Amino acid sequence: MTREVLTSTLSALSAELASAKSEASLLNIRMAKLKASRRQAYYDAEGDAESAGRLASLTKHVGPLNERKRQLAALQERLGRIGAALASDKTAWEAERATYESVVGLLGRIERQIVVSPAVTVPDPLQEPQTDERAFKPTTLLSVAGRSILDARKGALNPDDTDASRYEERLETAFAAFLEVIGDRPLSYYLPIHMQDFATFMARVPKNRSKGQLFNGLTLKQAVEKNAKLPLDQRKPCLSETTVASYLSEVKNIWSRIAAGVPGLRDMGAYKVSMPKGTVESIDREPMAVPSLNVWFRDAATSKLMKKPHKAWLPVAGLLTGMRLAELIYLQRTDIVDIEGNEVIDLTRPLRMSGQDVDRPVKTKTSKRYVAIHPLLHDCGFIEYAKNVTSPDGFVFSHFHRTNDPPDAAQKQMFNWMDSLGIHEPQRQVFHSLRHSAKDWFRDHVGDRLADKQCGHAFSGVSARYGAKLLKADEVRQIMEMPAPKDVDFSPFTRR
Image 1 (cartoon, one colour):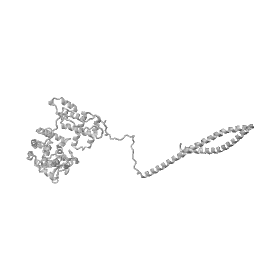
Image 2 (cartoon, rainbow, N blue to C red):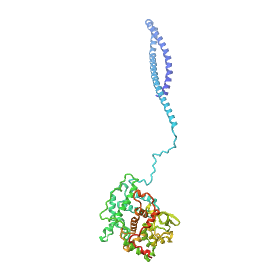
Image 3 (cartoon, rainbow, N blue to C red):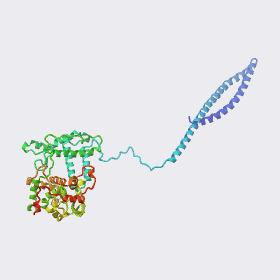
């Protein structure tokens, strides 16, 4: 019962009680008179019939008066209980009011200490959270996730970076091969042992299957089956350990990028793959044999070849500078500059094409360097030729720039030339062997550090990375003072 109800009831009962008390007083007086009259009538009734009748009438009124008295007593008891309840309620109410006033005071003090912050938007828990469409799940197909990785990487590349583009092509080729061999499944499907399955299959793939008509238009599996059905003496050699390892490396690279954003995927990169039995062992490139160099230079210096200077000058320039074939192909006449009194080839400069500066395509950061010009390059006539080319955009080897992929076109021409001279040996004796020969030549005369600077190789070790990264003037002079490569005959060029 609420305090308001109790108070209202108490007021009504109090009024009723006051009236009852007044009535009780009159009732008591009347009862006293009635009792006296009754006693008198009792005594008179013995000899008086009229008195007996009056006694009977008085007795009739006594019962209702007693009942009314009991009702008044019950009312008084009820009022007592209500009074007790009100007293208890008053105590509780006063306690609650004290607590309320204490809390109100505390909140007032806290409010004065609060620094109002900008409103923060609370996300609606019923609204679907926004996620990048590349937030892949274990149920996502490998083709979808891998395509996203390759597209993101491709978008970050410099379109003029030929070496990076070639690597991108290798990634695409390896990824397509893995999907064909192992299958396009949800990411959660793949196990580390699938890398072994992939390597085992790729070791049976014919080498250079895209060249010629034998395997033209066939899938990997079809090419493997066709090659296996050929007689032993007609079967084409299969991929080498180096090539198979390259495929594995590219797939692991893609997988590691996918797994970085999808928890719970297996670690494909940690699996140690065993090369299948019979896989052609990798062959390390070697420096160009001196007799082969002399054969090559004699042919290059002939009047017939000198009519094709884009071809004739490449071998001697490759040996005496240590530059990569692609670096030579993108060489411009304006790259030959004077640095602190010394003439050098400056590969730190951008290419100048159609009146605009274009990033020079290089393999690594250390490829951007100064290349010292040995006096033999002057004696043979290469520097004079390079400075005076009149080709569009000033490319020294402009002939190859008529193709979509100049370095690749040069590589194929050098292979055919060396093969026709009988100095080509697969993997071991190729154009890149000139760079190995040059590295030995520099290392023998000016040490590892200057050899690395000249060839654009990264320094090994923390201490080696301290100091100037580009050749200094005195270091250029050290290279210029080196004796000619031992036993190499440059006379076909020098006596022309």
